[in-house]
Every structure is written in structure tokens, then in C-alpha cells.
Length: 273
Image 1 (cartoon, rainbow, N blue to C red):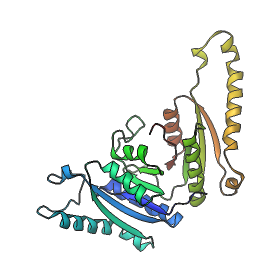
Image 2 (cartoon, rainbow, N blue to C red):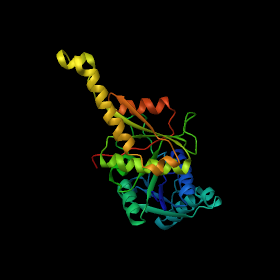
Image 3 (cartoon, rainbow, N blue to C red):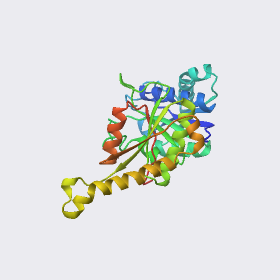
Image 4 (spheres, rainbow, N blue to C red):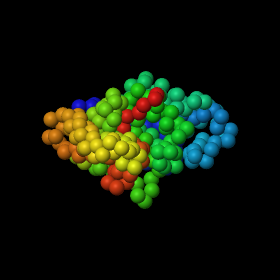
């Protein structure tokens, strides 16, 4: 199964980043991985740091003293990981394109997993759209775990309820392999979802409408068989994946099922890098 030995966790000193670091700690514990905390500061913000950076360096320092200050802040942040016996490193970098530097560092380490917070507003229509997290998600060659801001309804750690949408493409198959691995480590429940973008009875007519229920049944059965064939025999030793079929727009059905099942983690492939 999948091995995760090096985790990269970009930090911007927000509460979202702290929440992401909590997730990195859990994954590092499962896989006995090393965690590298990375802060990439944008030179455009050095004179007027945004409110996002709650621990911005005090003014008047040199570039070197600012770097030392930030490294100290990162070491404080990863202190709980070190206490838990997790090996850690800290890195401070500077670039006008933070997402590009995060991807570069992921390649250099090399990272097996990137865990980072997202300041997205929720829902697939606004999911980390235009954010650093989305750019990393689409450019990184390793899996990326994006963690939203903590709320009263936030998923609890460790992650016990997982959802993996599949469309039988290579990215979704790779995501499913990752989901199997996480399910093994977390002893969690995994739902495998396939969504059909299928017309309703009202959208078609004539003989096709008369045959539609039978056609739908056959398509459903073939899809169920394909989903079940994706589950290796050895995976069934540690979890019992639940194949689920739905009709509609994929993003809506994914979110609806995730909400209905109180899903802690969605594992899915990315197209269009």
C-alpha cells in the first residue's frame, strides 16, 4: 500500500494553518512520517503584512533577523509534534508566487503528501477558487490534503468517515488507492461513490422513455460491478468499502452525500492540471 514518509505543511500562521498542522500530526503518526513546516512570505507584504499573518515579524529587522524570527515561530508551532515523537523540520522562504515555491519544495524534499489550510468559502462553487491551495492542488505531483477553517461542525480527528468519488479515470483510481491506505491506518469507513449525469424520465420521450428504467438498471449494475472490481481482496481484510451510485451533477451529489454521512474526509482525483 501507499507509503508516506515526508509531509510538507505550508503555514501562514492563521488558525486555518494550525488546524491543518493538527491533521499533518495525525497523518505523521499513522505513517511514521517526518513533517516539514514551510512558511513562504510574499515580498509584497513585507511592508504591510495582511491581518492573516498574526505572527508577522516586528518592524525594523533585517531580512536575516526576520527569517530567524519566523523560523522560531515555526518551531513553536511544531512543538506539539515533537512532543508526540514526530520528527520535524522548519523552512522559511520568500517569493512573489507562494504556490509555486510550495510546489518546488514539495519536489525537492520530496514530499509524499502536502497538508495545507484553505480559506475557501465552502461549497464546490467557491472551493479554494483562486487561492494558493487550489494552485498547489493542481500543480503538485503528490497528494494534497486541504483543510478548511475549524468550525463547531468540523470533522473530528482521527478521520473515521471517508468518501471517495470515482469516475474510473486514472486520477480517481489513484485517489482510491490513497483512500484505501487511509482507511487502513484510521480503521475508518469508506464510501466509494460513482455519479451518473443521467437524464430523467421527463427529459426524454417516446420508445426511449419506455426503455429508460431498464437501461438505467443495466447501466447501474455494470457500474456497481466496476466499482466492486476496484477493491482488491486484501483491502477487504481491514475495511468493507460501501459502493454507492447516484444520479445528477457530480459536485452536488458528492457534497450532498458527504453532508448526509457526516464525512470527515473526501479523497478525490484532480483533472485539468
